[in-house]
Image (cartoon, rainbow, N blue to C red):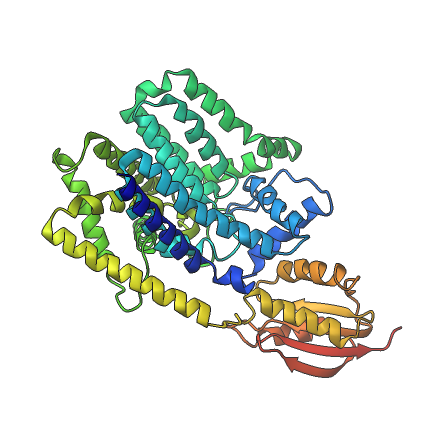
Length: 502
């Protein structure tokens, strides 16, 4: 038995290494996506850490006037403080959270169902396309992967009668409102419905009320914010229930109810596909995974196929997933793909359990060996591709933006100069943060915004409308004459101008 456990832990170590290599290219290179969302969040975290401006809210949601909770910002504040403003710190945090998901799945599933299912489950999380993506850029929905795994396994323990897991389930659901509120709402309602239908006795316990009480504590920042701002978020939510579509639709999205339901279903299917490695040379392979999943769920009726605890596990996961999907029939707006971030965990955990069960069938064994080899080969190819590639990233990644800022400072020879920035999203949060980090802290000053003396125009061409920066330049430019124009390897265009001072 000890020998088996030793080999199992060696295999788990190899799975962790595989997971780290699949997720580590951005950390290793220090060149990761740094767009409007990343810039916006780090500007707010910078206010907390370096300007000592405490906040009660986090990032905005799709609904105007409603915000995520602030704990995401405070989570990012720790590595940002430790690395003195370097955005690599929050990026490393995303990597650690993604890696911790693999570890939590292994150790919790090992305790529940044994070492073999734990190994298969952790391997699936290690190679999952969307789980890998959650480690490659800073974004508030990404920690949902860890929260949802803990929520799922905690809910299963609760349904088994371990009432102390009320503390975990309701605390985790409350925490989700600080990272992705839309999914938190759906999961909270789904959980209540599921427990009412299948585990009513669990409500009649001290643990339930204590769990709700602890969960309520995580809402205190939003409640205080609402009280201080004339119930802004409450009024926004009621506005939606009264028929307003504020902030939830974008151009040309209004459509018939049936088309909207079809759109919801497509989002769930895309979410299912993203749970597994996405291989360009076999784009329809997800259908095989779907068939295996349906086969395994259908066989829940055969008692000799699953143990009683395994049956409960599959029933809990499929039950929550079914209720969650049916609730979207009442949701009269588009479902954004990030609303479902981490829900892939449900498919992966069910697939892991089914995989171990069908290994005793000849056809099942053939399918699993084929899929397993395919996943490993794809992962090794992806690792080789990631680490052999020197992807500069154009205007989207950190290096291109930093090079542009460095160019301006060095070209100006550290003299006092002005800087005007154009980006397709209009807001310049990403540059605002990087100019503070590299400009004020490294060079001792931030460029002014006056068209006098030497000043620069830094322009990101829009890949969809590459001419759009010209209209901005013609609108912004009131005086001065161009001295030189350069296009950097990232594609960023920089113009140096000079205007006589009044």
